[in-house]
Length: 160
Image (cartoon, rainbow, N blue to C red; front, side, top):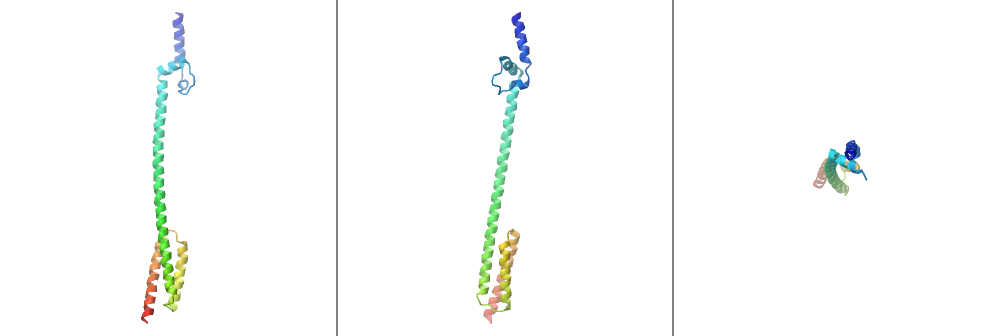
């Protein structure tokens, strides 16, 4: 009878465990604690909680990787757009310099020539500060107009 009383009290002590007592990381839980945690399902609950945390972390990691990939795609697209704009701007500056050189070459010698040279020099200044797509487009349009004027001046001069 004494054995049963001891066994009964041991089981009651084991049943008195709390979820905090059923920590899987515990270094050396007692036999009764282990028994109580196993029979009460606290260990299983702890394992389930940790599995949920791992799954949640995996989902968050997957979302973070997708965000990173999206950010890298946007960065690459921005870099490409910038490279394209810089190439357009370089082309416009080269075209402007060639047009200005043609005008200064001496084929056209009159007041209109001097005005057009001044206009082209102003466009060169604008080209130094152009940075947006809209500014580059406007600059390209102005250079095309200036090129037409220079062509007309040269043609008028050769017809004289």
